Amino acid sequence: TDMDNIGLEITSVSLLPTGSGMGSSSILGGCILAAIAKCVGIKLSGMEDKPTEEVEFNDSASLIYAVLMLEQLLTTGGGWQDNIGGLVGGLKLGSSDAHVLPLQTKVQRVKLPPSLIEELNQRLTLSFSGKPRLAKNILQNVLRRWAGRSSEITDTVGSLVKGASDAISCVKAGDLDGLGQVVNQYWQLKIAMAGVDSGVEPDFVHSLLNLLSSNGAITGGTLCGAGGGGFLAMLASKGKTSRDIEAIVENC
Image (cartoon, rainbow, N blue to C red; front, top):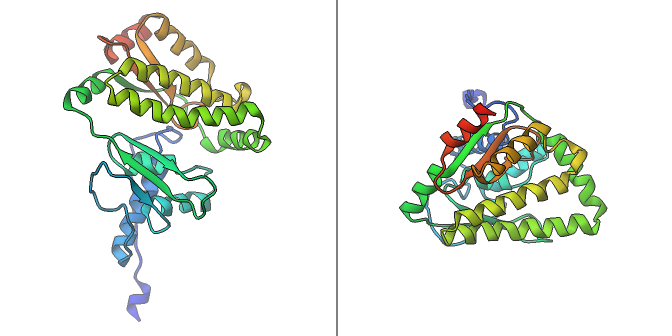
């Protein structure tokens, strides 16, 4: 029938450069899958916008799980963190249960007072490093090191898991300086996971973070995503803004 010949033509546009570290592939995949599901009448949980502070479970019938499967088919090598970060709005804590298959992720959103949101908006800075990167290359190195199960790597993974909860605790307490310290720890742990010689931290990023820290401009900073380039997220010190960071960089 004529119905069998009906297809979809999808056009996507993004202002982000390739290899931004912002999870754009997961966000794009989620948007396309959600659009296709709606067109053909497939209901995926997580497509509706229902902000709640209750724990949300994402099983194999969820949009987040569908994006995970899509990225595995595309061999991009990503996990589920970008799916949750890009498809669930606001501050949230994502987790998954070990040794449970099929994978089931959980999300708990955190409601923030308007005053804290305003301070975060003033102090959080996002800057493109000028260098795109391919997450797959760095992630392959991470997986090889994880497969070795050295005590250093298993301890690092444990610290990364704890750091996520610590970050949420700092924000809930309104301790943004503490959050900056957690961000710094996270970046060092991410370098340890990939290996110092992996290219996860380009020399100019190392120099820039040291410069801004020594000048008291930031309390924390990290490359987004797998590292190696892309966008740099920084938390300005109390009383500082992105303009202060920009002024230091321009005058160095």
